[in-house]
Image 1 (cartoon, rainbow over the protein chains, first blue to last red):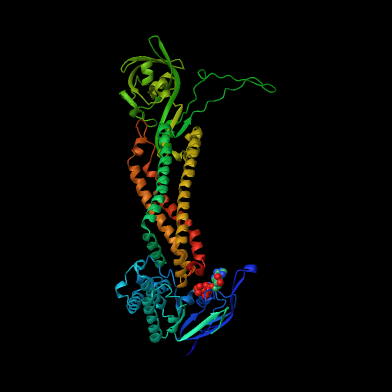
Image 2 (cartoon, rainbow over the protein chains, first blue to last red; image 1 turned 90 degrees about the vertical axis):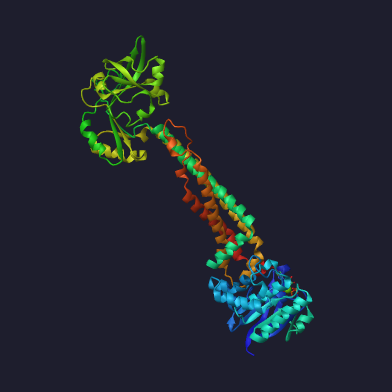
Length: 225
Length: 404
Ligand SMILES: Nc1ncnc2c1ncn2[C@@H]1O[C@H](COP(=O)(O)OP(=O)(O)OP(=O)(O)O)[C@@H](O)[C@H]1O
Ligand SMILES: [Mg+2]
């Protein structure tokens, strides 16, 4: 297994002075290509913060962050945007999709925003992904009319659109009932197995975590297990 | 760019009612802009046509020669009292040679050599002071369109004929075809027949003017040759300030543009145009504020989406273009609708042809609606208005925007 990303001595503090909160206190973590990992820890332990930093949406206060041998710690907003677009996919808990666009338009977005238009090739890939997510009937559906489980599956399809090495999912099933959650997780596991895409999924759900091959536990701003 | 435009269009069509309202608001601003342009422009033309339409655009007046002072006046103040009637009439001698020269100047459309003076009109016991205008037969309507004001008889000035204003005719109880005696300030009198009665609608000319032929005026003022004044009409009355000096250079005569006499009128028109600019600026400002606040609201409402787009690899520039495009589209649509509505409403007004003296009309000129300018300024204004919200959107921190 080849190394995919590594963070060392990661520190993240919010605010300053009296109000200063140290969320991450020198956290170390390495992940390899092809992993399917769960991120566990009590509420407020810094799971979302870590995912945000790994997703290059936020700079750490200190520490280093490399992925695919690129030092991302101090990279510019522009190069991070580009890096994110090509190598990282996101699935969030809420507000995942652009509500005024169809499922396909949402899925195609990461490619279209890079190429400046929706190409036929991109649309074909988007359709394939949606079919794979069991949404063949919903390809041209306005996303506002989809069920919660369907929305999350569209979000997974979109996260995979640019064939990223890493998909970060922050409580992707937090809003779903057991059956829908199971369905989303099955699809993630399937993609991970077939494509070798690395997943890091934060969750409070032991059953979901159990579906992953690795469990990373965060506590007190450090990886504790 | 194209993709950002697609997103922008979708955002606008997603909330149709809101967009329609916004476009409607912009269109009202544009409508006001266009209506003001047509009104202010029309008013200026209207006033010009009504007041300046009948006047000479350039006048060459024979210069009165100051009487030589025979007293030595060193060390004292001399009060010179000069009686207009007693003074020998100043004359332009070389007009027959000058007329074709002036006529050849581009922009000159009419030239009327005249002999002007004052006199008394008598019929029976009634006497009335009048100013006498001697015009060349065939050129009666070159400056003021006399022919259009004739209520009885004809504008053609023949030998022994006189044209009088309706007020004067009524006051003196005269009638077409009657004979009157006209005595000039030079002491000559002539018996003339009233061959035409006109009504210009303004007091002065209708009460105190008598038009005779140039030949009659020569006899009245004892001027066998030359004229006292040459009036010139131009195709474009605003060209007077450039053409007058050319005539002066060409002829050596003191050619005066109408603007020298009409400074007050021009000042009033300028002030009026300025008021128009202020009102139009307010219309534009309203558009800008309306678009800016609507887009600011929209960026706020779409914060999570902006965060998602940024997370998916949309750059700041892309987000910026999405919101600026919305502004541009709103401005363009509002501009087009407003311009179309403005044109449609202005069509209902009588238009420029009704500006001519003697016609009933409103001072609104459909050709001066400044439609293109309104559309361009509105679009630019809306783009300007969208820059602030767009920048705010582009600078959003994706993490807080997504707000997980
Ligand atoms: N922008 C911020 N400013 C100040 N404090 C913040 C900010 N973001 C997060 N925090 C704080 O950092 C800590 C960790 O938050 P984080 O969202 O990473 O936790 P989490 O493990 O994802 O929790 P949960 O399981 O509830 O989602 C919390 O105490 C939170 O209040
Ligand atoms: Mg969290």
